[in-house]
Image (cartoon, rainbow, N blue to C red; front, top):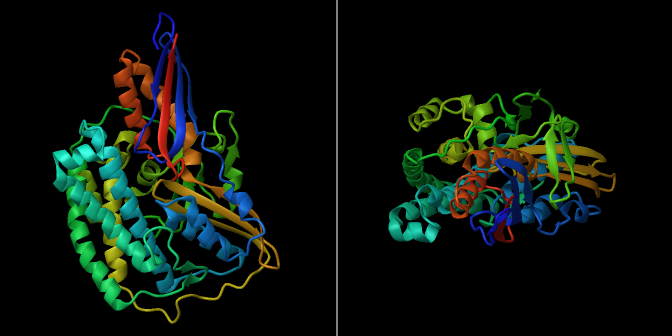
Length: 431
């Protein structure tokens, strides 16, 4: 609806993001008065339903939070509960967990790059249009996603909501034949990943410079994925057990999801944070390919995260190959994790950013308190600030073009509102 003092712009169904939410922009004259990323999907109460459950249950239950990144929830839950019980899983079992996590990064990033985000840069409405215009490109993306799925299926028992993960390790170890099959799959995936990186490097990236505080895990031994030390660009490193002292959640009226700040500042976690804080930990050969794709050691344009994700796919494929080549079966599929009263903390890098869990467990092995801080909840405040900066110089655009560009900007962050639905409503009020 348009009249002399007010313009309302509504997008009824934005596909290619996960979950139900709305973006409301209020404009007066040439000023953007407010930007609200309103998540209206009903709360799912996972923290509450975990209370009173056996300490062995969080890995399986929390994996149901997300069908795209269930491994992230399983691995983080395992680390937190094992920490509470005083157990550290190392050696080949830890490497197998890392291999499983690589599979999730491959399939999640491949999905986002090819089906969710690339159509924006190609002037296409969706992945179906990409399939019609260049089926080979979509087939390559699906091969990459299938490679990630096969890793998760071999290590996790099935590709979605894996069932083979348990405290202390796994219920069953992979066979040599299964790993040899994955090696063959990964050889093709390496080719596809390099081709994908070269492809996305040629996209035309809208100008946008953001200056958020950044948060990612750091690991002196390599690129952090399944473990590490939380590190802020300004806040510096702090222990996982200190996470809640630095990252504070708060409720806002316009969203059922909590917002968060890092030491009082809006912060961003995910590919952009990982790249700026940890790209120096990547193997030299991958850094060289990233440089050829136009990525320097620092990136401040969220639209270029599609290139960072392509680099991370290539790294995950390479890391998975390395783990398989060096694998030797451990003595057992899991180490014992007896219950112990205490608090445990865990953090890993989900595809969309740092994921944190805390569990308080009593002497009977029951969960008394669960705290789960997902990446998208942490990113909401920063996304709103970035969208304000993005919209301001584009207010001269008509409703249709402004809507299209806002949708593309939101997809750069790959927000995972939930895994249940795929809708976003965008409303712009102009007066």
